[in-house]
Image (cartoon, rainbow, N blue to C red; front, side, top):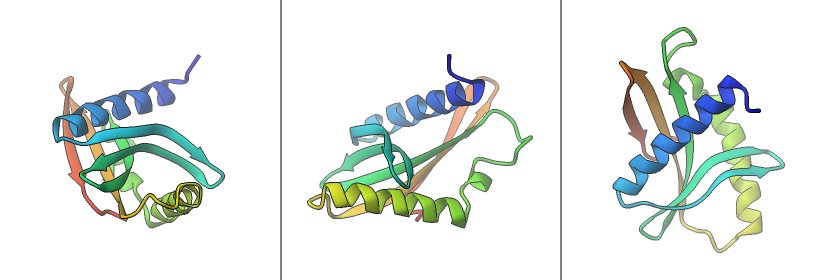
Length: 117
């Protein structure tokens, strides 16, 4: 059975997925594990491959969703992206986006940061 943290992460990724699809992105993959870490979502925005990190918070106890996207986290994500691109070298051009979600009164507020890494 998934932990509450895992269920929350999955819920955030579902919200992000719907948000991106409404913006016209095509989801290519999700929960991609590489030897260097996990990539939450991979999508196409036109002909550009987009690797997406999703952070969601339901309260401010642990800081904002943006606070969780540290330089160290971005460096690990870049390593995971590099490992993915070794498997799929034709996957160029690409960028890393971050989606931050805060749930307020049962309503998600979504902030999409393009090229955050």
